[in-house]
Amino acid sequence: MRTPRRFRFRRTTRMLLGGLTAAALVAGLIVTLSASAPTPQAAATYRDPHQPVEARVADLLGRMSLDDKLGQLTQAERASVNPADLTSYRIGSVLSGGGSAPTPNTPTAWADMYDRFQGAALATPLGIPMIYGVDAVHGHNNVVGATIFPHNIGLGATGNPELVERIGRATAAEVRGTGIPWNFAPCLCVARNDRWGRTYESFGEHPDLPSAMTSVISGMQGPSLADPGAVLATAKHYVGDGGTVGGVDQGDTRLSEAELRRIHLPPFRAAIERGVGSIMISFNSWNGTKLHGHRHLVTDVLKTELGFTGFVVSDWNGIDQIDGVPGLSAADVRQAVNAGVDMAMVPTEWRRFIDLLRVEVRAGRVTTARIDDAVRRILTKKFELGLFERPYADRSYAATIGSAGHRALARQAVAESQVLLKNADGILPLDPANNLIFVAGTNADDIGHQSGGWTISWQGGSGAITPGTSVLAGIRAAVDPSSTVTYDPAGHGVDSSYRVAVAVVGEGPYAEGAGDRPGAMGLSGTDLATIDRLRAAGVPVVVVLVSGRPLDIAGQLPDWQALLAAWLPGTEGDGVADVLFGAHQPTGRLPVTWLASASQLPINDGDGQTPLFPYGFGLSYPGQP
Image (cartoon, rainbow, N blue to C red; front, side, top):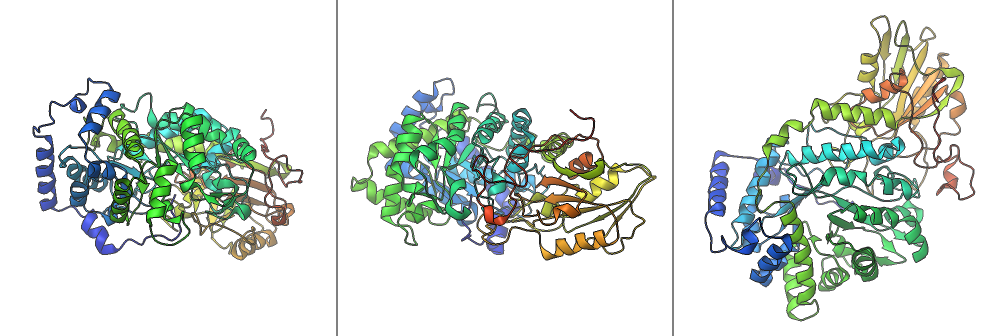
């Protein structure tokens, strides 16, 4: 979601906002008690949960000043706003950017932080609760100890919308366990160029696959947003972010409107049909015009033609990019709001946004009707979520965070996401008994690498960044005591006595911007040297590729006995081992076309190019239908 020109969070700010002292707890209790005390609005229609939402919204809107309304359109980053600011400026929303977490990074600290902000919002004269948003894009991935599910490209490989809906429900429970009612997910981009650093956030290159996987929205939002375990979902990024020229992040998507509608619009139509509550605008341009200021696509197509009744939120500082000049300007604000953006994600420039928008409204360049429409949309979702009746964290859901049941679900998703691409002489599945196995590779024993970007921090990290099971640990747990598993990351110590070598290689973690690959698309020199070392010992090599996209491996593939695409499996690496040893049959199928050469990119099904593996390809084990 975020721009690569990332605002850096200072350690001191994290400590101030994340640390919870006894004094802060007392202050929070005072705010809570004052917010729940009788007010002149206590008997107002908007306070009555038995009244229809529409009537409650209309009543509240009629009581709001211009400052109240402008605050509802404003979203600030947690490290750039104090709880007192929510009271003073009537701020309606707060978010955590990627990696922006309280200290310590625990579910309790998250819930305490959320409640402090909420208490401050409720202390305003009208007592309108704020709505907190977070990027829980493959589980509640900002929180240490949460269940980290496979990234979307792996879920697309499962071809299982019902499984994905269950993952959405599990993610919602873990997010709610920290108090948060709004998730900036799912990403419904249709990735058309593997050079793009966000390819792994796409369910697949065909619009029908992301459209089917909108089932995750039903899981997140539940039968009703009023369900205490539901979160507001966000379909992103509208629209065409996966089709930029050269796969450049935040670049230009140059297509006719007919092609844009055919390839990139269908998943959003499907999301609206499922009742998605919010939609996030994309950083990219369409034929040179930034989406954040595109009235035709946002108001005419999304809201009017497709009938979207939720609210539209901008991406991180996305409004600032409209006029092409650094720094938030009146022109940026005016064009975005008039285009149909309802809530502005202005992480650090929230004061300036409010001031600029106030001037635009008073000058008549942004109408009161447009402001009221935006506020009405936002308030409707706050009422539907039950935030007026249940504004604070429901800590009963904290027990679901990283629970055994959710990890079992993630393990199943990992197993179903594996795509077997080569299996010479039926070397797979491996025998768990009486076997001598050598394991090597940079990604064999690294939770951070197998989880990828958007895990604990924005770009992800290396090592044991959160609890989980590495692929190596999964292999060791899968074998019988009669077998021996030896591990060396570089492949040192292997010899011909081993019956098989498993090389777990691929990409390191990355997110948007940093993940773009404009040049070579192959394995690193380190990975290639490791595989060569294994081959030189005369041992059959099984390659497990941990990556966020297909890589250029056609030149090396003939030397490998088997190839398993594991994508970015998350914390439950034992799901990879389940397929390697046959506890789970390989059922995954390619959600993207696999390049035969980097020179082919972009390559997609039906474009006339000959791939290494076609869209939908996947092998099974002998005897499996």
